[in-house]
Image (cartoon, rainbow, N blue to C red; front, side, top):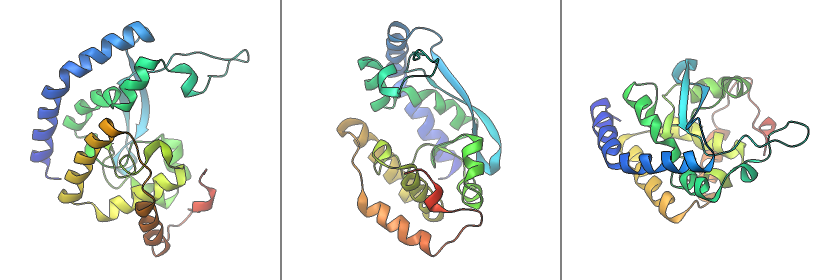
Length: 208
């Protein structure tokens, strides 16, 4: 996507979604307390790490052994809605303006995860990570890690302005109607990957 167009869309989204972000902040404050933001180091384009920010949507509830409980047990009903509507991701619009992220691209992952992907991870990081992506509109939480990676790699190879605008439009649809697993897209990505082998990368080793 052209950088000027990306900035224009980003600023427009920032203005339109500001009321939702402020409402989200209030919900987080009363549901899970402070701090309002969660931050973590993620891998960006060409493997350059950056600090990712999002609204905190889960409590730090732990079991008797000190381990964090599953995500579903640490969310409240209100913060679950925030996550579904992607309101928790809105702070990342600032990262798009800083050119650390893109509106559309593979979601930013932990550096250790990218390293485990080998050359596939390097290829995945040849573009800026996105606020939303092909995997996010093709099933997202209904996909395995392996399927998400296949879709991300396919996107990097086929990215275009038309595809980016399509993903942005579908992201709104997913927020309204919910996630739907797209087996057709998974199959297409899998077939493409068979003809594009990556060194130090075995799809079977990625958790299902």
